[in-house]
Image (cartoon, rainbow, N blue to C red; front, side, top):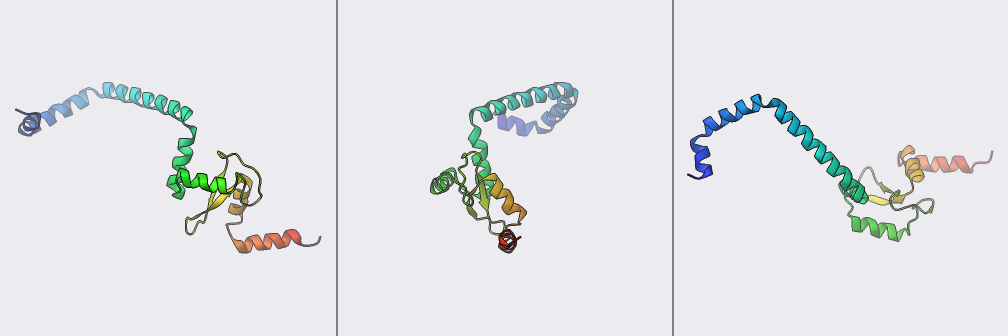
Length: 138
């Protein structure tokens, strides 16, 4: 009798036995789960140490919908400079700026410029008033 046929013929008995084993071996299951989680954590730590950019690239793809290649094209087009202040920024520290309404990527910014835009709520009107404020005579 094949495994599938055997299971179908003895389904209730096998389920009952499985349920009994499950309850009788709670500590054994918990120990196995602990060990498995520990192994996975160690593996993940090692993987992240050996592949530091994978997390960043995965985040960019998930949040902004931009591939590694598209991001690299944008970085090269900006020559590694912030799109606002022209400060040279390490590629791993570059912020991906996007429109919060459409989700469209606008460019790459240094952390300071990215925070400034966020504080000004990405509003051109507020930014114009801030510029006028800075340019007025004291």
